[in-house]
Length: 490
Image (cartoon, rainbow, N blue to C red; front, side, top):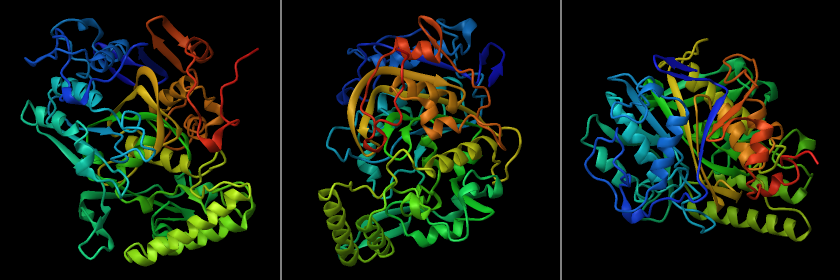
């Protein structure tokens, strides 16, 4: 809960700003000025073209009741109770990859730069000491190409105004090509720019951890995972900027996610960790063998997994890596021809690993001090605002299709926000583990109040009323269809 002076945001309350006609401004309009000189707007330039995204962000902040008494006046400072003068602030967008692997555009892929622009305006209005915009995308992401999607213009507009604003790539390891055409993994940042946080036996992974537990993450050397996740030891490598921050503003893109069901505020924290080999995404093998990678016993899939593991151990030897990857692909294609599917990345509703990793990171964000020690009380202030103007449906997070929803969601608590987001997507949060397990009274809780409500222009709605009022129907991930949808009473 954020409570101070003129603002009260309940942990279980989510603000929903919605417009049936909302669209993003054209990329040619970067850095995405508002189309109206709002009373609190401090810059001279406004856009000649409509900017519904900026207007929805502003409306969402108002609906959250932030600085309520001064709303609509030149003195309105919605983030003033969250951000104190001189604070270190981090804005964490979803920057997973520089392209949509399905070729369906970036509007449904990453947090739109127009949303970042609006939130930077209101962040700087609160007079922080410094502002960092950062994420740890996939190791194969071309970070410079990603920034060219309007983000560079937004950062440049704010770079010399009010407080230092910088962009940071939180990754420690990336995949690059050298002149000899070899794939190399290199250390992008030194270890002292990260904090090693061991959640230990309080980790949500501990319940499924045994000697030799085969935790895996796609495209990373499986041997490194064993060093960080074992009985009584569950370590994460968190960017120091995150744990040094007084305030973190979480800016997820709402998408379907083949491993977690949805990706929103809770899942977005995968990007505060610098090395992906600290992040269990699934367990090797079918459920019959103690894994959760896929439900059915399949000799072809099992063999493909073995081949891919050897490939991932040899990513620095490009010819061998690609040869092994080719063999694994042929095995999976054969499996599909025989009536199976080709997923060996934990992409189904029975994945019992990824939600645990995500919720561990949420607990770290709330409860870890800058040296990696967990405390009972929150160590920093956090606000989540989700970009759902165009969401990603279907085979997310890397191959989503665009689905116009026209929404911006805001909340003090990421678990409450994700419950509302799931319902808007036509999903039952009780059937989505990352939502269901986020509301538990365990060590370092995220949310314990199940009475989640949504503030809209039409008043406060409970979850059944929300589902009845907003009838969006994006496509669920392939491995989740028939197992996660919201069922309305006949």
